[in-house]
Length: 250
Image 1 (cartoon, helix red, strand yellow):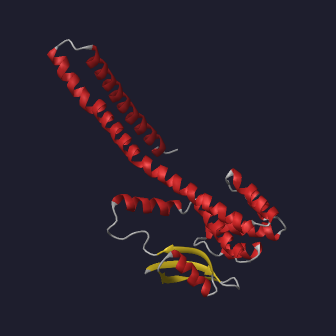
Image 2 (cartoon, one colour):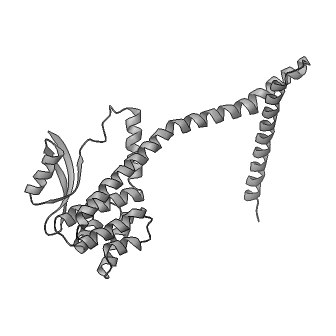
Image 3 (spheres, one colour):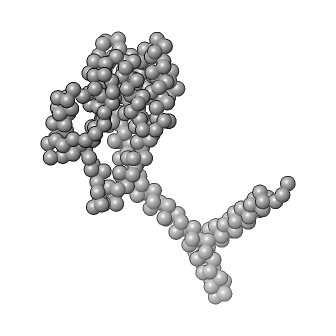
């Protein structure tokens, strides 16, 4: 048996949250339907992993939680709830009203509430999204408008939900793949700066005392090290001057 946490709405529009045990995700959805609840969100408990997670898994989980506060996650959550509620036969007004109460933070409720006010003012859902002030994918508003015109808005929202989820997954995979190269590049840059600014000047002193004729490649490297060292000293001096100007009385 697997444990799931859920958010669901009853026919009166009240939102319920809790947990249940089922063999699979499909069985959990059937259990909610038997109870007369409209599933809005269903997650497997413990999916984030436990103490035995690897470092990569822990970082991926942290990245996922951080991304959850972004506009893409907010849009996905709103589309997911609207698709479920409209598919259960609720009106757009009632579905948006329930969606406003779902986000955990007050800041996340501002956008659904603005959409609700726009719909209650007589605008269609597509116009409400278009003039909401949020940056949306180019296809988003046109697909909702087509769904409204064809009377298939719930199925259109479900397709949008799948598309948005796939885009978020691809974006997170790309970001995860770029983390390690970025760390390696940063380490290489720091190592080169240390070598050029602090290590090479000491070798230059030894070469000058030996009065040996150095090949052009060695002279070039020493010149780069000297330039980096001079720039480092100049940058530190400029930073100290700027700090003293800020601290000086007017």
